[in-house]
Length: 198
Image (cartoon, rainbow, N blue to C red; front, top):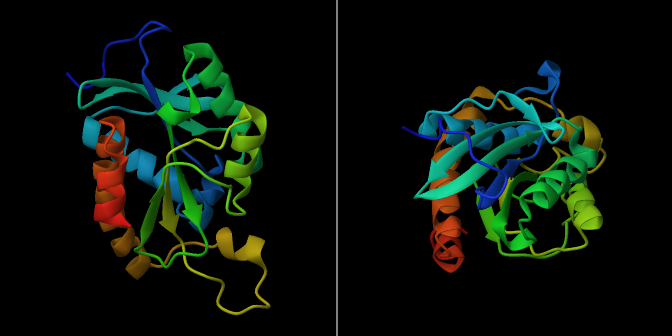
């Protein structure tokens, strides 16, 4: 019932992309928050993100009646735009209809922030998407991964570190909120999503 049908290339209306790194060693790391959220959404919809397309693993689904491509780029974080922009071009979907779920080191774990557009905020995956698409008008859901423990701590080491068990419990609530936020954004209610979850 949920998204088992295969759509033609003109029938996908939205892309919902979670950002992360594909190797198993990166599972449950802070930088893979986007993957964690997209997996949760797929589970809620009863679909499996296991088809290989657009340099990604993907699934087709319906969310509130909208035909959606769920995607997890396989390009590694810094080249996320290669995957996202390829899918955008194939389906002729503008940036405004591409929702990006990504990690944000400036937000505490258990917090999220929704933006309708804007700069990359220093997040390399978002930076690459904006650069390759030529647009910053992507609705995005930023997932808090917490600041570095101290200023001297290496940022790369921090974002590639694993969430603690307590933090994973906080993420479960954020995952549900992210799913609700995606539904609102696809229904053109991003202002309501921002009011509820920011």
